[in-house]
Every structure is written in C-alpha cells, then in structure tokens.
Length: 312
Length: 295
Image (cartoon, rainbow over all chains, first blue to last red; front, top):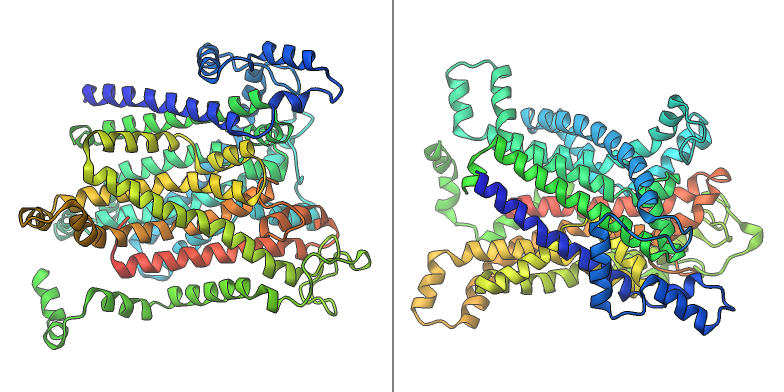
C-alpha cells in the first residue's frame, strides 16, 4: 500500500508542473501587451520598456517561466498590476470567502444528495425514486447562474427577505449568514444533482449483487442490509464528494459574479477584465493546486477504506 | 435466476432474434421521457435553424419607447428587452448562437478525442503515456474554471469560446476512447484478426472503431448539456459572444439589471438554456439506457 501511496504522490508532481505550464502559457497566448493595458496612453517608449524590465516581461519566455515558477514555489505570486498589492494577499482573502461558500453548499448538497440517492436506490422504480431522479436531472441541467438570478428575483426583489448581493459590510455573524443563503442554494444545485445520481447508481450496483440476496435470505432486517449497502458503496460516494467539493471551489465563478460575492471567482472575473495578469495566474494556479491535492487526498482515503484499490 | 430469464426471453428468441440496433430502437420507442425530450429538442433546434423566417421582428432593431414591455404585450408575445427589442425574435436568434457555441466544441472534441484516445489505446507504450499524461494535466482544472480562464486569456468572441470549450471537452472524450479501446483490444477476435493477417488500418477500421464508437458517442452526448450551460455562461460573463448579437447567456446578462422593473422577461433566456440543457440530459440518459452502456 505504501508503494501505491508513494507512486500516487509522485504522479501528482508532473500534473502540478503541467498545470503551471498551462497557467503560464495561457496568459502569453493572449493577444495584446499586458503592459500596454496598465500604462497610461501618454507613457513614453522608455517608460514602457522600464516597466517591462521591472516585471521581467523583457526576457525570453522559458526564462520567464522558470523565474516565475521559482518565485511561485516560494509563495510569491507577484504584485497585482492594478492595485500593486501582493497577489498572495488578494488570493488568500478571496479564497477564504470562496471556501466558506464551497463548504456550505457542499454540506447542503452532500446531505441532501446522499439521502435522495439512497432513497431512490432502495425504492427503485417507485414514486420516490422518480421524484429523486427528477430533482437530480433538474440539478444537473439548471444553469446555476440563472438559478441565482431567479432566487434574487423571488427572495430579494419580490419578497424582500434576503440581500441580493455582496458580503456583509458590518461583520455581524447573522448578516454574513443572511448574505450567504442565496449563493449557497444556487451553488448547491449542480452537486446535488450529480451526487444524487452517483449515489443512486452506486447503491443499485451493490443492491443487485448476490451477497445482498444472501443477506436477505438469511433473514437480516432491512436496516442491517442498508448498512451493508452503504458501506460497500462508500468508496464511490467519497470520490464524487471529493470531486464535487473541488468543483465548488473552482466552479463558483459564475455564481460569485451574480451575487458579487468577494471570492476567488469574483477576483478572477475582475482580473480578466482589468487584464491583471499576475492576479489571473495566481488565482488559477492556487485553485488548480488545491484541486489536484484534493483529488490526491480522495484517492488516498479511498485506498484506506478499500485496500483492494492499491493492489489493482 | 439465469434459467428463469432465459425461459422468459425464449419465445421472443424463437420467433426472430432482434438485432442490437432494433432492440435499441424498440426500447427508445417505449421510453416516454426520452421521446418527449427528443421532441422538445427537435422543436428548439428547428426554431433556431428557421429563426430568420420565424422571427416576427429584426432581433437587433429596438425602440426606446417600447423598453421592457411585459410578456403578452400587444405585438410582442414575450415582451421586449431593455433596448425595446422583441424578445421572441431575440430568443429565436439567440438559440442559434447558443447551440452553435455549445454543440460545436463537443463535436470537435468527439472527432479529436476519439482519434487521440484510440491511438493512445491501440498503440500503447510511450504514445499512450504521452497522450494520457497530457490529458491528466487538463484534469487539474475544474471545467468551469478552465473554460473561463482560457476564454479570459484569449478575449471575448465566438471563435475563442469555441477554442476554450473544445480544450475543456477533448480530454474527457480521450479518456473514454482510450479505456474503451484498451478493453476491446484485449478481446480475442482482435487477436484472431491479427493472426489472420489483417493490417493495423483494417483492424482499427473494421473491428475496433465499430465497437468503441458507441460508448464514445453516448458519453460525448452527455456533455452537450454542460457545453450549452458553459457556452451561455461565458457569454453571461462577457467572455463569449459579443453584443449586439443575440445569445441566451448574453441576453441574461444585459437583462439582469432590469429585474427590478420587470421580473419575468429577464428570466426567459435562462429558461431557454435550462430547457435545452435538460432535454439534452434526458435524451442522453435514455440513449445510454437503451444502448445498455454503463458509466
């Protein structure tokens, strides 16, 4: 098993390096000069050249990449072109806000999704199954940014119960929570759908195996059969939970844009429109790293639960 | 259990064994949800194709005096937008744009991904490692983030949307194609074909592709709904199709400010995205069940 863990850890390194190449290349694919976007129109050629040198944009690309990677490895993501603040600080604040939202929506989606999926599997073909499966299809089909707007229309504009956007200015816990409710609901729809579907099919797979029949034949009460089924479908359930949590963090850009929630997605959106390249790179890189590590953790956790995976 | 199933199916077998595709067709014909989804989708696609003839007004022509007319206003069945342009006409034209922006990347990914995946799976060794490890790197990003990041870097516009979404979907197809190819390659009839002197081209064309295309097609079809949501999402952020063109995501974005004036009209473009994406999901679910493909 330790061999497997070691190999899995080693495999994550080229993936991370590859991701860093993509993040770096992405920005240099872009048309237009990043410096031109931030310099005033009346800046002289010499001033532009000086700024380029200051940011290291004058060197060949491979050199720029290595220099950038070296600094990134030390936790230095550079300075924002727009605010001159260190990128790492901006990303850290935004990440905290995004994490709160991702955790809350994941919790909602996990709880409801696992419950709905299990109910659907154990009542296969009945009304409850059809209902749960229907909710799941709606969940995976609904454009969550539109769902966010609908929530604003209903709960902010019509009913005037909840704030439409932003995070609370005054740091009261209740105000913060009130601002969180609508984005959390909007963000939990997709994972709710995905988790319900995966849990349903995983539980059905186990339910159709012969050992379940044997358990029932020997007279085990259905509650105990249920425990067996849940235990055996756990690895699959865990995988989808881990993946969905990662998607929540990286996929919240659209919902954060709708609600002006000051998270990583909002920051990314801002950076794109200000052509603030260090921030753009920083956000994507941090999110990708988080995502890769999360996948790694899920894989390792799986081998702990089911040692057969490590043995292949 | 096996005997019981055999006995039940026996009469059918005795009269005329159904071919695989006839069985699939028979199952689809009995699946009401899939049929309805297919019908809805046909209407959406047709109305998008026929938009120039169906649309009652020019989608770009507005009138300041008629801004944000409610649904059911005289002359404008679905109301007008914030510039007084007819919503029905814009929804019809917008569907064209959204469908093109969403469906093209999946088709591109299907062709490119199948080619790369079959190559990786059939050749194996170093080729496999190079292709599959490269695809793994793209899996380091959540799909939404990757699409937005690439579009953000390339800038707005339909061509860039198509590029960024293709990059999102190619690795997904490659993974399915590779694992299907590896599975089929190990089967005995491939070895038999090779033993009887068939060349690589013949084996891939006649024996391999015929058996891997089904699963790849079905798994690609499950991507359509996400592709539609992402394509409209990019335009919603201002990274996709640019104004004044009509596109569902873009319309949703420009109408967002008007929800305080008129709540129903701004919800329409999103409803169109939702219905389309749901129809695609139901259709690909039905197809997968009918073809008995797992995953």
